[in-house]
Length: 174
Image (cartoon, rainbow, N blue to C red; front, top):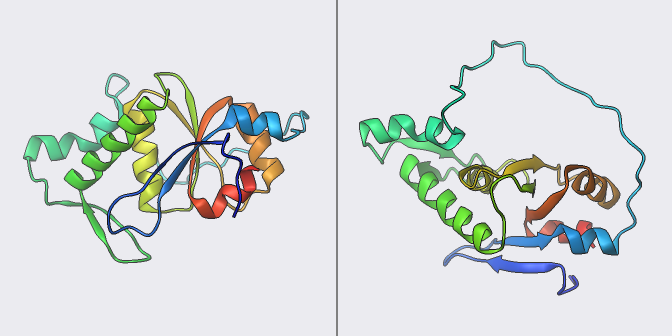
């Protein structure tokens, strides 16, 4: 797989992992791709279940980890990878998402910036989403099954400054 070096900001791989994150500059990607500028129609899906109350004064990450902080039980399962059965505790999720947040902060993402997450439904998606939330940045999500044109259109419409993805989806960004 070839990708222009100008697009890759940084790669991150952890010991004993076969997959890793790629942080891609959307500014460079959009300069290299022609993006259709026609507006699209909005489609909104609503759950039949009642809304969950989340306090307006409490950041999402605080809301999620509040029980963990109060009880102090870092061994409680927070997330299970259905593909592998691997369980992540609240402590695992909190530490990993903060590390990712630190990494994307070092790459220039700040409060209010938009970050596109182009990942399948996986623990990496959750960790990336929480990392962006820790920074006070905005997440926009894209389906890995989107075409390159759809991804580029979405990145432009959302003014995403970065895309978090995996190597298997990079071909859709070039």
